[in-house]
Each structure stands twice: as structure tokens, then as C-alpha cells.
Image 1 (cartoon, rainbow, N blue to C red):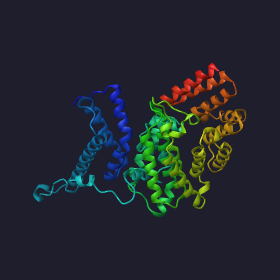
Image 2 (image 1 turned 180 degrees about the vertical axis):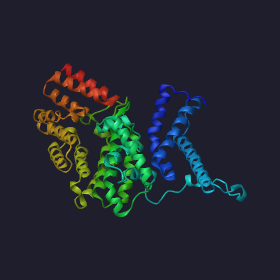
Image 3 (image 1 turned 60 degrees about the horizontal axis):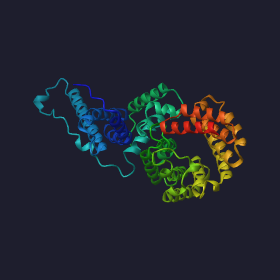
Image 4 (image 1 turned 135 degrees about the vertical axis):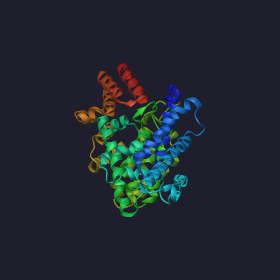
Length: 430
């Protein structure tokens, strides 16, 4: 068999975009049948290889997602039949199967089209399987971002600021552990649901963030991921209406998603928060987010959860008619409470931004300089971007240029790199 012809660059990018959007759905549907997440990913990858072979020759199908799903299902059907044949041969070893006439391989077509359960769907089952307690937390996050978010190993490594081989090993071990433990492919109920929600919420939010600000690639945003994370969050809110952090996460994502149309210009270039046209913010999503935040706050302990606090910060922006009317003092206070609940250098950096807006860049810069002493944060491009912004406001143009240039070097997103490079040039002209 001849090797598949490599597609030209534009088509290759289109196939890659289709795969990022459809991969999780395909893997989830196949995993529901074969009950093995690693095997499901392999079968889905076979469908992608088939697409790389056929689409350059035959053209992009009218419904690429359906094509990938059908191809993966055919691969799964072949695998199921082969397994059944192997098991039957094992059972009949040493017997005369032809004499009994019972060597027909079962038809598994119906299994592939089985009706979904009352609660959840394939993607939710995929998340809960990948976030099973049999796996350590780091492996849960890496595997789910790979399966649900469609992120490459390099992108996940960049998101966690760890070496790529470390992430690769985590993913391989995680899939093997799930297979060996025969983890059920289902959405848990009752107490089991409550105990496993925390990691699932974290993963849903990481997927949303990857859609909101892509870690790599040519696009500033991946809206399909935001929409999928929002949908999953709403399903979780229906499954666990009494969990304040579920409501808080939904509130946060609804409010953040309301800015989507205002975050890029007609050419797809990023528009920063303070420069956005707030008339383009989606008032319906803001209303839904504020309502979800009210539900979270009304529940016991709901006003102090990390997601509810972040949603409250987002709400400060959402209710301000202009950037100048933003209640930055309240945002500083909310970030302080968030740091008490969830210490993190990234949250400290965000608080420093708020301090700069509330009290001036001279007050905020020492906080950022202190964070810059951490080797981990030195590799975080947004630290250098924030530092560059503060230095530019203080009139320290050359230092600002260096900070923006360093941020541009570190980001994996092409749109963001261009923006940061432009800010470096602008700082020089001051």
C-alpha cells in the first residue's frame, strides 16, 4: 500500500482544524463502545490518518466530522469483530467448531449506535473516565486536555510549564492505568459525583481557557472549545444544582464568553480588554452569568469558592459601562480573597495588574518584579507582558521593549506573538 500523500499547507491546516473540533466527540463515541480510552484514541487517530490519505485526493467532505465518526466507527467495528473471533477461537480451542456450526462472528453494529443515557453524554463520560481517582491529578489534567481539548503534547507541556517528555509519559501511563483498572465509562451519581467534581470542573475550565486564549497556533481564540466547555458546564450544573462551585464555574464561563466578539478585529487580531467595544459584549450571556453567580452565592459557602470569586471579578468588568468605570479596588480585594483560597503565582500576577489599575504602575511593579524571581514564572510570557506594560506606563521605554520582546519569544500563539512584538516596537517609539 502506497504511503498517503501529504496535503498541501492550506488543506493540512483545515484538516488540523477539523480534527481539533471533532476529535473529542469521535473519541467519546468510540470509547463508549470499546470501553478503553486509549484504544478509542488510537481508532480515532486511524480515522485521521485515513482523512490525510483521502481528503487531498477526493476533496474535503461536506460534513468532515461525520466522515471521521463513520470511519472511526468502522475501525471500531472491525476491532470488535476481531476480538469476538479471537475469544471464540480461544473457547473452541481443541473442539470441532465446524461440526457444531456456531462459528459466526456477532454483528456489533447496533452497539455503535446505542442510545445515550438519560444523564450526560459521551463527552461527559470521557471527562469522568479520564479524571478517575485511579489516576494522579496531574495525569487526569493532561489526559483530559489531550482527549477533550485536542491539545498536542507540546501545547499541554507549555500550559503546565513542564518539559514535553514529562507530559508524554503522563499521558501514556494514564491510558495504560485506565485500561488495566477497567475504569467504567460512565457519569457517576450521588456521593461519587460530588467527590470527583473538583477535578472535572478544573478540566472543563482549562478547556474553556484554551478556547478563550489558545496556547499555540495561528488563531487567538478557538471558539468551539469555549462553546463545548460551556455546554459541559451547563450539563454539570443540571446534574449537581446544589454545588456552588459548579454554578460559579458556569457563571465565570458565561461572563467571559460574553466578550468573544469584541476580543478580535476583522483580521483576527487580538483586542485587549481595556480597548474592547463593550457594545459588542453579549448581554444575554452576561445576564446568564450574573444569574448563575447569584445562584452560587445563595448556596452555603458559595461566595468564597475559587470559581465564584473569579466570576465576581469578571462581573466587575461586565457591569462597568466603560473601562474607566471598572471597580478596580473591589477587584483587588476579590483577588486577595482568591489568593487565600488558592495560592498561585498566576493569581498574584493578576492581582498585581489590578493593583496597577487601582493604585498606579509604581505600586504594582514591585509585586511583578518579585514574581519574576521565580524560575517557573520567568518562562511565563504574560509575566513579561505585564511587566512591559507597567514599565511603559512609567516611561521606562527600553526596559519595556525588552520585556515585551521576551514575552513575544515565549508565547506559542502567533497572533499573540505579533501583538507583543508590536507593543515592543511601540514602547521604543515613546
